[in-house]
Image 1 (cartoon, rainbow, N blue to C red):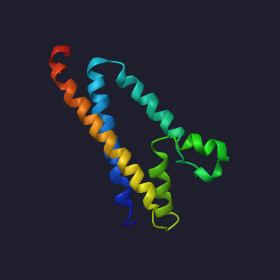
Image 2 (tube, rainbow, N blue to C red):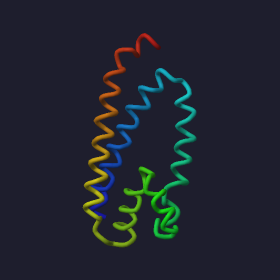
Image 3 (cartoon, rainbow, N blue to C red):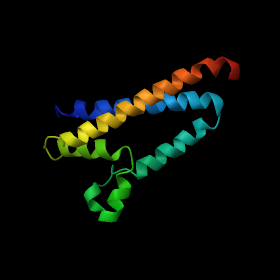
Image 4 (cartoon, one colour):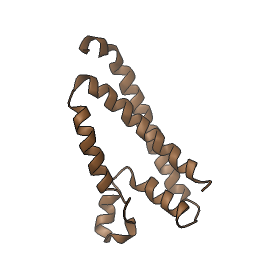
Length: 120
């Protein structure tokens, strides 16, 4: 359980980057608020929350790996249920992607921030 914050921190960074991007996009496109609920529902059912990724046939595991929630969910399952230490290569790779998404989301938000007053 002590490894869980190490797994959750990159997920929080990833979510923060997505939130910055969607918040900025929501100023210009009003329908973003309605589509985020649909996207969230799709991500819920396309992520291995209710089932382990190993329960799927190998071709579908590759598709499942495209979900941004697959890695932290599987790592958290290994730590909490399996009692194993996390796969550090997967944690490092997911952390790198999460940092990149956060930096890109912040850059996009800062770039578009000057036009918020004109649109609102």
